[in-house]
Image (cartoon, rainbow, N blue to C red):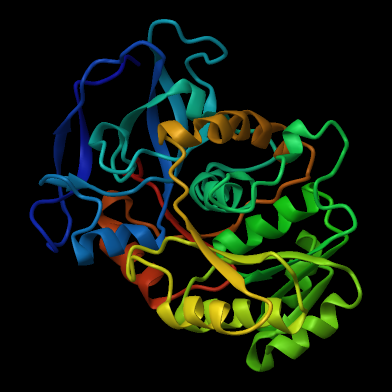
Length: 357
């Protein structure tokens, strides 16, 4: 199959409108790009927030979706390492509609695409890249904590002898953050979740899971014990979790500390009360916010080696995908899938197949 000149897509025709199914034109593959038939795409909160709040959308009609898996159908000039028929997964490019994923075909820079190992399905693979990139940015980019990534450490683990707190462990980002913390060698990984997810998160690598219903700074401090806390990562980035993150760092008397949160579209900035609390008590806590867009030029030094490394980690069983919650109906299921994600899921990733007939 050659790369088509158009793709059937779920298109938002105007601000805040529901998706309509239509054909959208595709431009030819440029140097370094591959064409992909999308077999599964995951739904993330950013998708419905973009539509509901008219955010990150430069023009209409718009195509949402930036987390997917599929099969290579065409290889552009100067591409090496990929062949037609390869199974792949990737983080699409927000705002670039030829590289968005709520459609049957798209194209991507090959350097940002991972090969899908045989031990996972496309539905599992579809929900890996976006949430992992958020955690990778928080952990390893200078805008976050700036640790050395595990694929660069040569056995010298950046978290050795340290503790980390990950708020929201059962979220998609939280699950991948736990596993990155394990790969980075943290001696104590502490997170929180509802009781139904405790055992699952321990299997991913959490050493202690604090019950979400009565988690406070003292509970986290007790779970950390006498191991030095390096930083707190907030995978939820609500007002309550940002304030809690600051309180944990102050309760544990962590010097030169910071809370790293993820950008959640709305609100756009860090919570003002959390920032004020971090500066009003001792020790002071800096609140940072990261936006994990792997295609951004200043993040490709992380996203490109991450794309290569994830294939190996998954194949060796060192990195486990989110559990997919599949919504049948092909592109026609897009509104149901968005609504399900907006309502809220725990420990799962909502996935549908644009190629399903």
